[in-house]
Length: 117
Image (tube, rainbow, N blue to C red):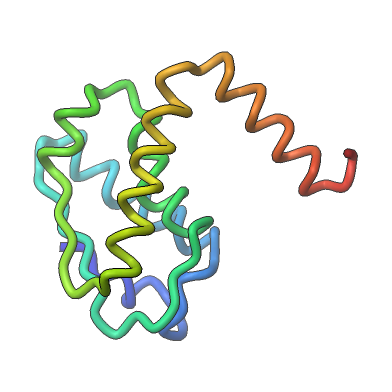
């Protein structure tokens, strides 16, 4: 089980650096064939950017989406968090299924974040 709160210094899942740590742990478990339960106990706020990295990036691995889906579970999440997770997974599957288009979108996002657009 991955208790999201254990990676954070406060009950807000907003740090992309912390999300990367969650991703690494979950990726390692999935690559070993283990199931991963994301526990959102004591989490008061989650942003999409955190979920995109912590969960969405899993769909960028060279692993079948169905295999990943079968290994992920979520506990102690609010309906709002569940809804965000569902959207992140759907968008990640679209993003990674067409890598060339996804890479174009990602480059655009990076440029806009850096202020180049």
